[in-house]
Length: 130
Image (cartoon, one colour):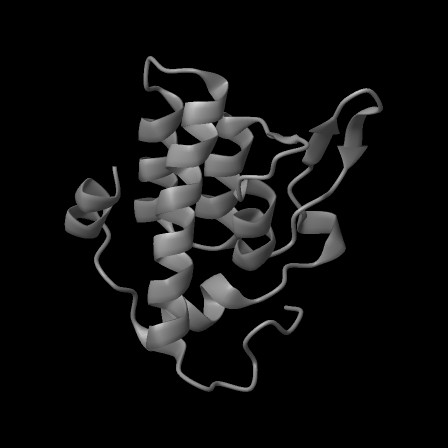
């Protein structure tokens, strides 16, 4: 998928990148969590593209607990990134396991995070709350 994402994800403008990297208000967070056997779902709400990337990162003792449709809508609405939202939807629709969907979404989110960081440069507002 990464090769496809490179072809589909046009690097964002500096302004779009700064918007993508900000931390959204608590009220605008994406509800998510991490499944940890035997405990169950541990809440881990998402407020930034970086936090989404971290939630989706592979880990040996748990799985992301994420509603893919809600994640795509959040990326589009709160981060203002319809291109990434489209790739999240595409990965979520693949006929593969939940784990493989999470890995595919992680790949495109990590790529977009790297693009946004590069485009934003050293802007002091990166990571600041909106």
